[in-house]
Image (tube, rainbow, N blue to C red; front, side, top):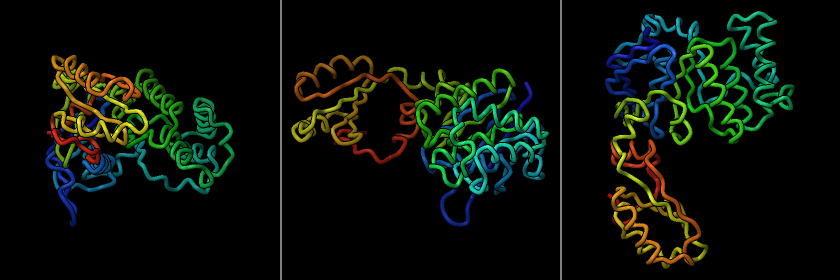
Length: 322
């Protein structure tokens, strides 16, 4: 199968700050939905900005459908639709105009651009926004205008950096469904960059986890989850006013984490989960617990396994946490 991207020994060092990308090697097949997962500040955006020809690497090479992106970055727009987290250039246009103009700039005829713009507006249920200025919309609505503009003219490859940030749950679902449709019906290659993997892990066909500028692992979702297949997590929510009397007990349990006020999470092996659950129930009692659930392995668990830390790195850990 033809490679959409081939990245070799890609390194980016900024004048101030740590190394952003450190000798990254990866290949993305044509027609693949490929995920780049990792926490904020991991180097994900730096990586894809180089792949989109917007940032020159310190060293290394990038090939897009056989074209040398480092030597000729102007080739990228002929193949790639790129969406980033910063909405620029659309605020003075109406929502519908932003889509239409983008399509025209990418080579669509008036009729083609109008037809696709109208179709996207209907598909994402934004008719009430169509004739409003993008600059007057909410943050999530402005991001949606930029995202739908990225879809114009059906680029052969899409690079989407945090595409569902600030979108409501219904429109997030519409985005995932539309990406599946583009991939399945048109063979569009999609590179999905995100730090929020709970939804995205069900979309991608193959994924790499990146942290501190380095690739930590790569494979299918199933392959990576098998790294932590023996792990489960018990999430406990305490009733109002009960945390003070329960927190010392919960904090003393190995691998316990205080996610937020009155919510704790305990990581355990599957073999120890039953005993752990019984101990927590016996010690705290149902009158202390508002809710609880067992969670099977996710990409967050894979990341913790590979790096020894949580995604966001700002949870309050229990005394026994490793």
